[in-house]
Length: 318
Image (cartoon, rainbow, N blue to C red; front, side):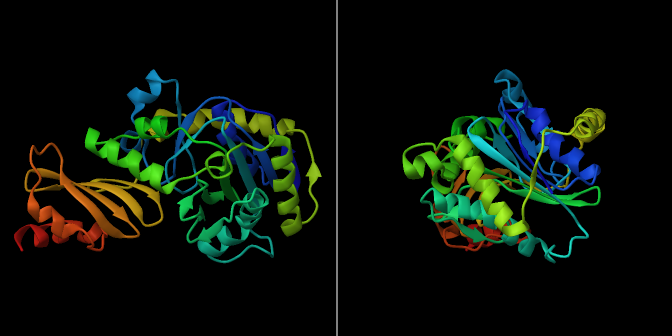
């Protein structure tokens, strides 16, 4: 396995990198940062559904749809990007997504602990500090390789993240920002400062080598750069970027496991729900001049997408 300790890259290159490594069957651990901010959506998602492209265009925020799973993430210069590419045929490859993430997020978890942050793994792919998310992780298959793409959040721009996501109402956007601020944290927020990046890169490499064995430091191979340019056309083709992804009945944004902001249409109204630990904690009618008392009965109800309409109907008519 090679180790790529790369300088800051343009936003699109940071995503093309692991796609090219996977298609070339090159096992690698790559570390880099993005020069510009961008939003990245998962394989099963769609840019037209997830992203406010007008906001992104106005604020010079790039937009990318990747070939691996996971949710929508906002990435900028304040994150150390960690990309692990491994052949699927490896004998030490765990079975099952949760086991794979648990194993290969372990070195990232240890890197956080070296900074004095007690990061804990929560299935399926979250790292939490004090019950707040500290990384955005995606994974899946590219070529004949498994890819885990994650990050270390040094700092975070909540305003741009809330602005870059497509929201069906301004009430939804405000609730989303509140939810993010209450359920995400960063190295700077927890420790009061940002560590020197060379030292952090060294720590991450050492933790992964303890798990996977010694790695060979390399410059970015020419064939990888060439493959990045070859697949650029494919991953920016209008058919790929305009695909709406898996169909959803209403707008739902997952902030971390168990925490969502949801807007559900019901009898000509739009019901805004805030969900924490799979339980509805707040409910309101979008645009309503007065609060309707029946909404209070939704608090404490278990949330699941398939039953949301039924739960709302039951509480509204009780």
